[in-house]
Amino acid sequence: MIGVSGMRGTVGGTLTPTVISQMAAAFAVYLKQNETPTNGSHFRIVFGRDSRPSGMLVRDIAIGTLTASGMEVIDLDIVTTPGTAMMVKHLGVDAGLIATASHNPILWNGIKFLNRQAIALPPEQAEKIKALYDVKACDFVRVEKLIQPKKNSETHALHIRRVLDYVDVLGISTKRFKVVLDSVNGAGCVTSATLMSKLGCQFSHLNNIPDGQFPHEPEPTEKNLTQLAAEVRRQHAAVGFAQDPDADRLAIVDENGTYIGEEYSLALAARFILSKKPGPTATNLSTSRMLDDIAAKYGGRVIRTCVGEANVVEAMLRENATIGGEGNGGVIDPRIVPGRDSLVGMAYVLQLMAETGKTVSQLVAELPKYEIVKTKFECRREDANRAVEALKKEFGHEKIDTQDGIRIDWENSWVHARPSNTEPIMRIISEAPDRPSAEQRIAAVQAVVDRVLKG
Image (cartoon, rainbow, N blue to C red; front, side, top):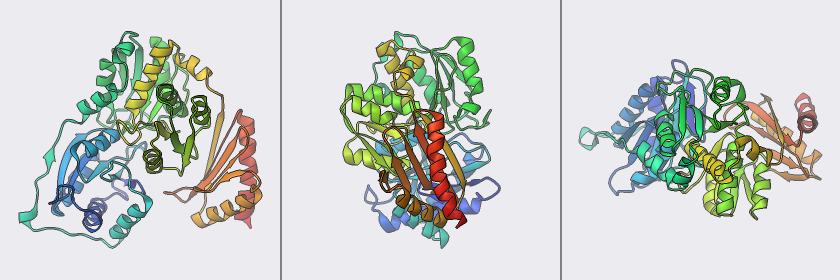
């Protein structure tokens, strides 16, 4: 699968050494055709990877191809995705590549591309790379123009320092919070453990060896975090945190061992930040309206974008947003990293707990309660587009947003129906004060879609 964030495939299946090399070569050609080296002489790229066992294979092939293309590559080794993004800006390089398949199972891997602003490429630029990949574009250099790859081990320490700059370390440390963290044996192991130590937490670390041997399905959803929930209860911990393999997403378990969901990661972080610095907030169309309620409390507004981290970041930078992110546990503070960052989320939730003196469950209880229901089904893009057009006519009298499929808003509920950018499926997501109401909204939209598909 090739999309705006890069490519993913199965190791030994669709993600072959040839495919990896072809994509790296296409990226190098894209840079040469569309960019100018920051240093005026040659392109420089940082390369990070999550902890998957196939990471070295992807890294070595990609770095070899980039080197053959005349690029200078700086190998960061196993680091988080937000850490790689931070190093793009810190080192002033021209791009960043990350060998990761995010929350996908162990048999998957891929390459994610970042531009020199440290954000995923806009769709039109991603399409250029895909077109170059399709024609097997390459531009290899002679031996005298080869530049030996370099290594850099600053990422973890610098990332922690950046996060600590924006919280009250002493205020958190005096609380001595008992924290349980599940890093799923991913890239967040080292950085997160050090962060918890710096914040004075009594810390228990589950699945803390960065070898990519995921002990459970790596997406931080409720059904995959039963071990974390049980350990929080057993230890009478204040909070449980869960990361995905590249540590850009954060899920939370409260002090009772109850999974509160990824949507609350952004909501709680936003409450902390907006109480200090009111301002615009940005998120995608599929994220909970809790964010709207929190922003309104502090006199702010929410900018809604198409689904995709790059779209949210672009809106944040354009509107000078104070905080933003996505409802999949992606908290974004552009002062630290212009992308989703689980370390930022953890630090801000601990700061909120320290300042308010409230437990996670108490903080959650203070937020307006909504239920999100999600469904998806196989659907060709052209059929999904026809369904969206029918929904525009059917619900044209309601408040609608058509920048990404269609989102229909009522007073206290909404539905977002959109074709996937990476798979031949259509997604329908609804949110309402209770689950039956959300399901009714989905059923009403699904009925229109079914009528179109059957017609």
